[in-house]
Length: 414
Image (cartoon, rainbow, N blue to C red; front, side, top):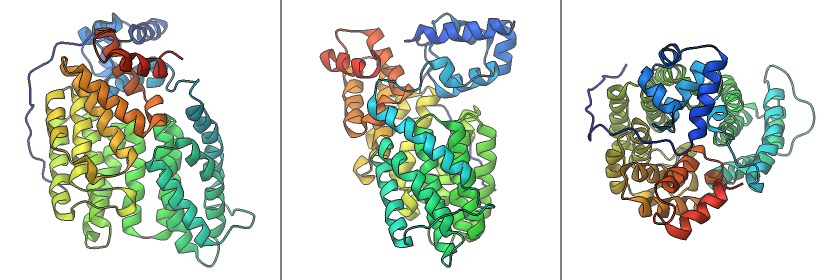
């Protein structure tokens, strides 16, 4: 087990920020009244104060923090997307194409139970390996529509090959492909499907018997659980896997996977409102990253830069935008030259700048950078849309001018 170090909060308490989407508060109120619950009772279920709940319902305080919204959704027995509105703009053709493709990915995952044999003939494993690499590259470029077109056939063919003469190699490729599937499904807001992909990833890793691969699969599952708001489940999975992987840390790739497990522990701890523990996990990962340096193992890109990207996200969710921006200023983004990592940097830093006020033009610039790199990701991101709403609510004519209005039209006016 890891030693937990104490942390301290940076910055001053912030005045509650008005919601840029008053509809969220209205949807929360309707669901609460439908159940016949008082504000005090509903708030106790979500682990927030009744005063905070009341302010959110009245639109006085924003509920765009994904952890807060997830807690309220869990208390009301619905999904965060139902409270925040549609998770993706239906008029975005590429995002819509990705969602259509995700249906086929879901079926392939359901059919891909390794306890049942798959029928048919598969291409040579060399061809499948190149396809798996392509799917991962498209994921890194945030081309979700292209990834979901490739994955169904790839998953089916790899399933067939796991019963062939090169089963171990096929299982390794299947583990990578199902992890790719879990990541793209999470990005599309299909959280139950992402969990299913993580289960298939774990099944392949266990069949292979490689402890590093098993840790990688646990990272995939823990990420899916944490994104879905099951923070304790995500923490348990990641912490258990990290403890196990410590025994094999000398193996190739083990340190990088271990570091990513520590980062999931940090995020899950933050979701559970244990900030000191979260920062202790981040410190553990940072110490390991100083030893590994920047890496590309298993497409995780673990290293000092990636640790900072996770820290920015955690501090934004915690409501300490000053600390998030401070971390962003020192981050060498060029060290992780993949779109999916860079877009999180731009989007999360823009969220922090929007919270600070008087930094709106810089926030708009970063959002436009994110959109240029990964339009499908940005157009499907509830966090980005809420940030744009906040900026528009503050000033429709001063903050970013025509650029902000154009971005708003692409994200909100659909």
